[in-house]
Length: 161
Image (cartoon, rainbow, N blue to C red; front, side, top):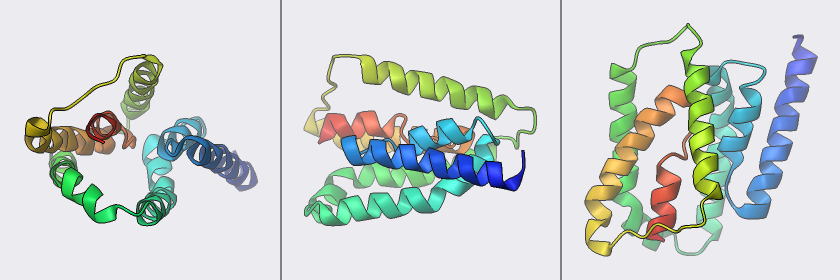
């Protein structure tokens, strides 16, 4: 694939992912990495995704008006993500075999299945701290393996908020 085709694929993936995030408020990483994974490795797609994802998430949190309240409720999950990311980097092997693409596909299928479920998870306030830390750590490790930042943190965040 030549560089013009790759740039067009990247632009198209972010255009569609940005549209999804604009409509439902989330989905930029999931949609873009799923589409970019068709033309490049998950590691390359994740590297391209860092800045747009960070900018849109910070913007969304800042204009939402309740940033401090949000951080107070989600700090255990955020700390867990940092811990899980560090542990994942240290323990997960560097993969050149293509298994990361399989794990990415599996993560996207799981996320889609949860999206199709009609149920709603609820986390009791007394469990938020330790469950947030655990879900954050799992999210960090899964992000290292697949480049997807939504499993299980999005499910946990929706259950808490």
